[in-house]
Figure 1 (cartoon, rainbow, N blue to C red):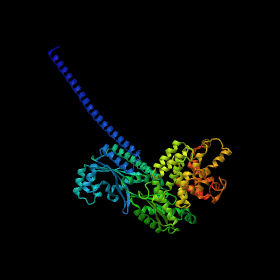
Figure 2 (cartoon, rainbow, N blue to C red; figure 1 turned 180 degrees about the vertical axis):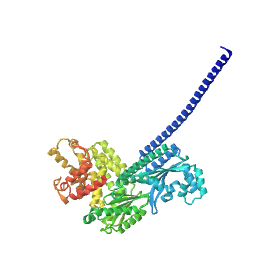
Figure 3 (cartoon, helix red, strand yellow; figure 1 turned 30 degrees about the horizontal axis):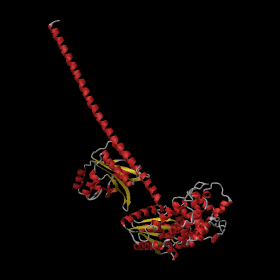
Figure 4 (tube, rainbow, N blue to C red; figure 1 turned 90 degrees about the horizontal axis):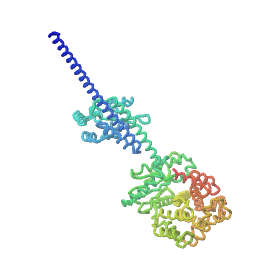
Length: 630
């Protein structure tokens, strides 16, 4: 090989090396570029995953709120705040469609607040919740809403000018700069197939991605579901505490509220007054015009109570034609003024066919007439029925409890029976109950408890609040028959004492599961006589109670015992005890049967109309119990 051939070969080798180096350089450059693109894709996917995760957290937050049973306002405020906190929007709000004399408008009902809200306050001297957006002022809104399409715009200034037509251009510009908002997005919301309002978000970005818009659309669906659930929950809650006919609170709510009000009154040493209202002549209205017009009269009284009360007053329909109103912080003199205003307002209402109706009212004040809630309500009832007996359409102030102490008579009677061992119960139980009675203030609840404990010495199945329920039902029934207060007080004492003769019967007889023999039946039939004559007759303070107790097992058709008298010959108080006792017994377990439901027990009561009790007594009793169930 010559010199030139060697040189040529060397040159070729150099070119090959250069070619290899260049090729390797190209491969490294391509690899580098691919790595850069891969890193960019990983960063984008990571960002997308992060956004998706935040979106999922936001939706989960909304779902948790929907299942919290919180009020709709709380749910909506928490919902829009989650958009700001988790997805980085500057501000978000929900504007609800409302209507006034000038037409439709949007008003903010929930907002994320914080800095954005502060800027509203600084620039416009108002909160975002004060904003009212008129549809004609923002030309895009009707189209977006009617088409149920998301609308986005970068024209923040136009939105500001629409909300505040008088704002200067400089202020509008400064507000846009201060808030750093570069765009807003409006998402229409529906409820019950109609326009509810809109979700509005303000973003620091000019354009929203397709994924972002899809998420906001999904988020809006969750808000619509939250509105539906919250509305249903509120409806169920209101149904539970509201009387369906009148829209007032029901008995259940009233009884819960007055207990809380009593605690508050004692803590703050502040009285409250209860007004009882009873529509006059409802039976006459029903008989002459029909029950529909009776309902019209009841609703008319409800409307008067709604329009004549403060926001803190509580008006409730207690059942039938009876209403109660609680006046927090009002003493008896103020209560009389309010009651008289209600009476006059009822009297002036004109109703179709009926003309004018009237009502009888009673007034009593906590910490003035009584310090016991049950007793206070009894005093209200007594005063209300005093108004009826004195001619109706009037207001009567209750008498203080010191003047109406049937409880004292009952306590003294129990102490006499127990301390003198007039009934065969063990010494330990007798002393325990006597001590409770001697230490007790005039308090209905304690008296009921002692009575229940005594009854359970011979009837273990007796309900915990059995005595209280019997007295409440009997009192309501007695008022339906316009019994005076004195008769109702005797009835209450009789209920506490009528079954005390059972303590004289053998326990094996009371708990017997097999059919009773004729001898067993005769023993049981003697118990009202035993209670009346052997136990109570020596106690002078209850002598006038004895005839009521002796005859409380007499039947309307004359088949009862011990004297087999019938009809009107049976004292009405005895008739009331029989039907109340029979109903309550049906609700309790017995050795020979299980306790019945309230509806089944009422059916049994109906079946014995005109046999054990009169048809009129049956109708009134069933009506009272049904009101108690509602």
